[in-house]
Image 1 (cartoon, rainbow, N blue to C red):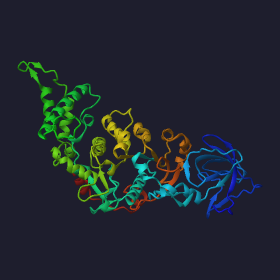
Image 2: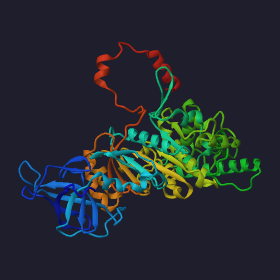
Image 3: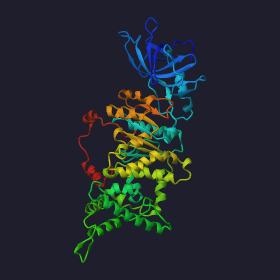
Image 4: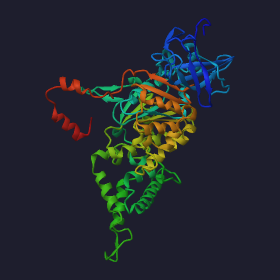
Length: 546
């Protein structure tokens, strides 16, 4: 820093383990409403500004959290609350945490670009730059992409805060900095790859790096499900006969998978092994047991009538064309089709791609959670059995994660939740990173969120959601959560291991943007066409094709 620059703005008045108190200079002491450091002009003592606390050779970087008091019409003499972020060593290197605390009277200086840039000196070489500091627009924010992906991360924010914007921007920059990335994106609303009115495919990502797949056409069939996921799909847990149905289903599926294993020349098989079995044959076995009588039809069998609800539910789905991609696959109807599915799934099909966008918007709402968790489990299992997993890490991005990775109190999708929680707990060992995106962190699995090493928090106005996020982040960063109500669209508070310090960041606008903008009611109601092609709408509705 230029020794000629006068950067002194105040002095420390109080020192605590989690924060410092300070007082700005008075008018008599030379208070200046604006401070210029490194060519940048800042309002002195502005909330969210960075300051440098100096005492002899020690320098601590802190964030202004609160300003109070002062002279009428002036900030002179105001009290400040500061949150320490880290300290600089004698060579100018930055590290998180504070080891050498200041004492009352230590000088508080306005931090300039040189000091803030030193914070990102290590991560800048990794070239992953998702945004910039709002108070220092010329200063880019650089994260460690390996830490971000390997130790999982969460993108949290209320509707309209810019979650889709952030997801698209982060992935665009990951693809640009990592030409051999392998990313699987669960797109629940068709926001990242979509078709225009003329039918042309549009994407938020480079076409040459992207493979867009309709989940129905990809066909991830029922026989790839774990047994717990099958139970979620086929059995109502509040049915009085649910335990009997579950036991009978286990016996039937296990026997049919053993038969498939034998045909493949394999000995021994787990009930969760991804092997083909006939769902129609499972239905017939349930039907036979449900109607079985002895003594020439005079005596009801032990399971007579126990499976009425099961048969009704499964039968209706087997005859519903909306579920054909899942329950009546046309291509994935043999165990030998699994390698081809996995190639398409992880981006090794033809042509190769960096990101596989799986569009779940056409999938019936009631099975989206099951299909989503099934995709996640396949990603995990693929690398679990992959001996080259360290050279082939996979990032799984889960949009609207609260819809299929619910908290433990929600039992409807217990099997799917456990599948995704396994990724959160064990994925790091097998090269599978998890990114969860949610507008309701309170409804998202506590296990998954607690395993996230980094949090990208957009605007959250709900006090309960703020309190929940506060419990998730490290204690020294919890006070920063209060800023969440003031964030603008696309602005985020980044906390955790991937950032060299907690940082408020304006995420770069994605180019191109996802198809997630709010509908402009005013413009549409002034300029819209007088009529619509209702017949075309009905045809699309009939065919369930958007």
